[in-house]
Image 1 (cartoon, rainbow, N blue to C red):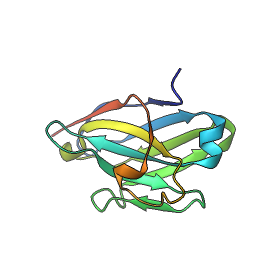
Image 2 (image 1 turned 60 degrees about the vertical axis):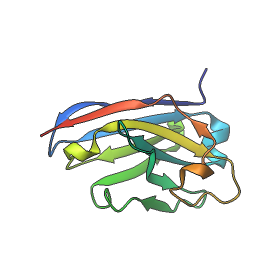
Image 3 (image 1 turned 90 degrees about the horizontal axis):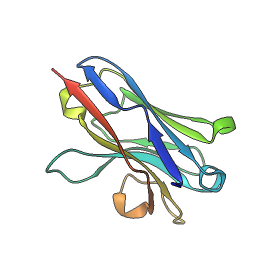
Length: 124
């Protein structure tokens, strides 16, 4: 049974919206940095948005102003609200968590727990 379980991916037209969900174990949700990464075919996995232990959020420049992180403490769930989607947002999106002392970063190397991924496809 995974510690991070994503849902909410799908297909949408450009300009549309999707909300991704990541349900975590209580240990991860309360003690780790968490965030979303994405990987398009033939490309490296990149950081999209993360929230650190203090609640500070970090966004990739390409999504700033369009994507928003939020948390639901009662459900141990991290959300990524994606608005004004573009075809270049199409990718497999992964929820990730970091147990490292310093994880206030979008760097993939600082994240050690991963979900199975959920596909997002944006058509022109």
